[in-house]
Length: 201
Image (cartoon, rainbow, N blue to C red; front, side, top):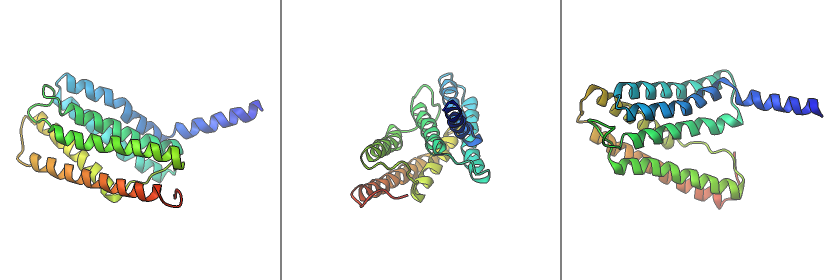
């Protein structure tokens, strides 16, 4: 029995301590560093940390596919790392003393962060009632996340350079529109599956 427990423990540890999961965990651990850099008003360090965290996002998905290291833990840890970092970045770049010269509009942060909060709550309710444990992101959802990342990188870079590009307000509108559209899509997909015959893979 002790041997069986030891084997199960080793198996669980090996599923957690994979390269993609470590990269996702790094993204979570880099978030406090990013917040500190923003609070210390060090725009270039903020940009570098966010860029590094973004690189871990690209690498964890790549290594999971190439090395076939996809795990159940990774299915939750990867999006969790994304949302923690993006939420922190949106909030920090909305704080006036920290985001200079470009500060994200409050309405944009509410739309982007609020959508993810509502999706997380809806997913939790769905899991508790219907038992679904995996949700695949839609194409629009992926596109909105990519656009959010590019927008945040652009604002951080512009703040490092001390410039205010005319393109930024249009990016705010585009990002908000695509994010809201993805949120509506997730809502209707969730409603259809919730009242459907049962969870599907």
